[in-house]
Length: 129
Image (cartoon, rainbow, N blue to C red; front, side, top):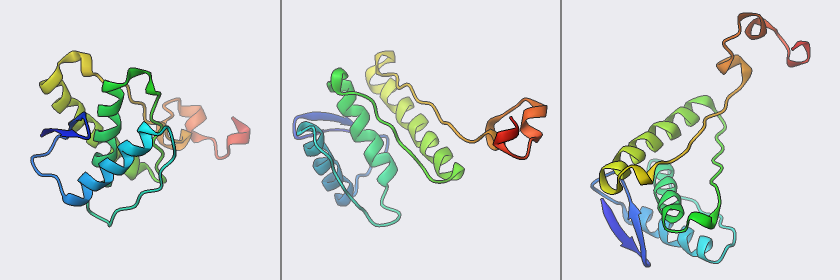
């Protein structure tokens, strides 16, 4: 779904938007416009991840000079879910806007989860590496 939010074209990869998601996006956009900070919360299961990613990446598309999004998660499964949502969003944006809408994203995890060097991966502590 593509829609206007306070003068910004927002690319949202799903056909339905909860009212909470719309309000979340509106408050987040106001914070970005004011170059300020925001502390927002939504109930579990209301799509916080895709809401934030859709709004911020749409804002970056409209304002290329606004900077980068650094999205941190506590667990590897949360990171994997976020990257899956981002892939879904990217596919939708490419369909709507074309290749100019590409998003650069990088998921970083620990040596335990990502290292492919057998000797380094087997080390028990980071000090020994």
